[in-house]
Amino acid sequence: MKLYSDSELNAILHHFSITDKNYAFAPLTDGFINDTFLVFDDQLPRYILQRVNHNVFKDISGVMNNIKHALTYLEDTDYSKILLVETKNGKEYLELQEETSDYWRMMTYISDSTAHNTTTDSNIAFEAGRAIGKFHSLLQGAAIENYVDTIPRFHDLKLREGQFDQALSTVGDGKREIAKSPIDFAKEILLLLEKIDLDTLPLRICHNDTKLNNILFSKETGEALCLIDLDTLMKGRFLYDFGDAVRTIVNTAPEDEKELSKITFQKNLFESFVDGLAVNKSIFSTQEIENMAWGAVLMPFLHGIRALTDYLNGNIYYKVAYENQNLDRSLSLFDFTQKALKELGYMEEVIKAKLA
Image 1 (cartoon, one colour):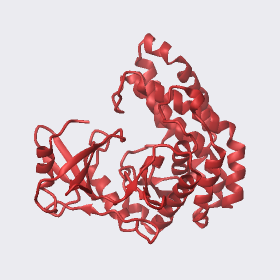
Image 2 (cartoon, helix red, strand yellow):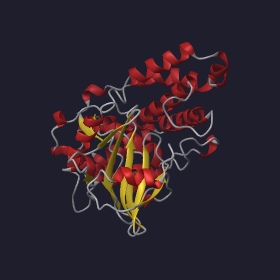
Image 3 (cartoon, helix red, strand yellow):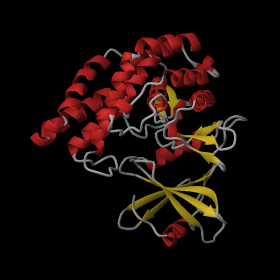
């Protein structure tokens, strides 16, 4: 994250339709892509300010139109509404043109909310499932043709395989040897995952990044409030959102955990998560129910092969705190992929029992 002074950030806020005064800021560092700041007014958090990474999101207008459109649907008695704060020119985002273009947006902050990177609490797992199911239920009325692909082919296995092969063709022998184990695993699982037939599954408006810390919870009641980080909101298949949630809910270790023995597949958390989905089970098709468990194998693998590819390419996509962090991410994600694959039959039984 680039370092910004409070005066620089206040100058950016001056462009938005809020009271002109001096605000205080705190950086939020959990995200890998955007620069995010919590904005305080009279020592209370009021807004979220973000610099959108346009190296990742090439079509800023498309991203913001997707979000604006979706937010008109994402509100109910059990789903908290987020508002975009417009600029003084009436736009949903700010473009600052200096040496290079910077893109900024503001949203309202949901008070007394919190997020969890991992959990051991079955109620949190249940609430996460309920919120994701509610998210999809609310967006069923959205016109899918109004949404652009903010990252084209984001979860396309063939694309990620091609990027992986390209990285392998140019990487030096030293890195190739260090990463031999995950490279071999990736080649093996790529062959296995070819059996998933996504064309039989309905297209939905998906979040496409439903890791646990992209769900806000009430500090007071523990109830899930809403999903955040909507940049990747676009067309997709439900098993993407299912798999991303499972990999971060049933595993109690962080995604770059170095001690692989700490990576878990907690069945009680899985069952609670599916119980949460079952609150809105009428939205799922037979084909989705039959294929849903594969999402818990596909999604950690996709994240793992992307991290491995980035490591081989010299860490040009994800933010890293140390040289081998992407390698550690891939090893952790691949270990969970293996664990999920071993539980595939179990997951299919639970899903059928609770959602069919």
